[in-house]
Length: 106
Length: 120
Image (cartoon, rainbow over all chains, first blue to last red; front, side, top):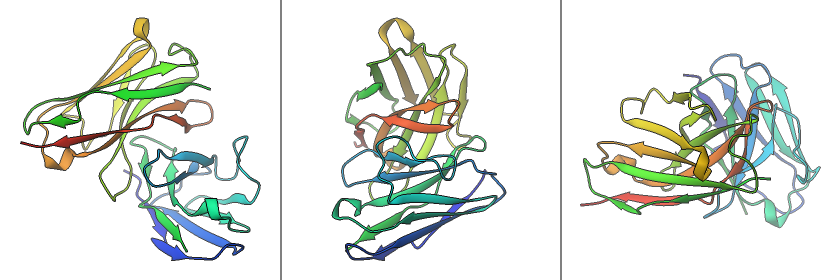
């Protein structure tokens, strides 16, 4: 299985801050990397796919980068609604695997 | 965009079989654009992919659960289902169904999730 490691596991930030979360794969996964946002009691929501593509409706303050084994999710100016847990997920091959999550809190 | 809704018992006794159904609406379950997946999340923990099924019925399972998992599809009812046998307390989790967009290779739609507790 491909192991996905996120860091940090949690972080504290303020509204307006720039936030960066990293995700590392145990082997090269090209650009087959997705990011999801999950709020308490809710299902995850697709945030970024193919490492850097935004689905329609996702604010442009979110961006993703990376390829191979190292990936980054950035939030350019943190908004109150962005406090959530973020998960990376590799789509390179089955079994599909997720990172352990990064909780972004105040 | 499709909508997904999980249903099934919220309590299952140890050693029994967990059975859940996901109903697809707002789109066709026979769309060749999707695989239909199950994912679970124990309380306070991360996400674990359980497996997926195509509209033709071909399946892929997580090897960690493969011996206990069966995913099936009923296109006439726009539903797909999960069965997990010989459950233990470790199987207590919120179970999500989700659509896997084949071309984009992502889970683009999720159900709201259903909490299943293994409890005697």
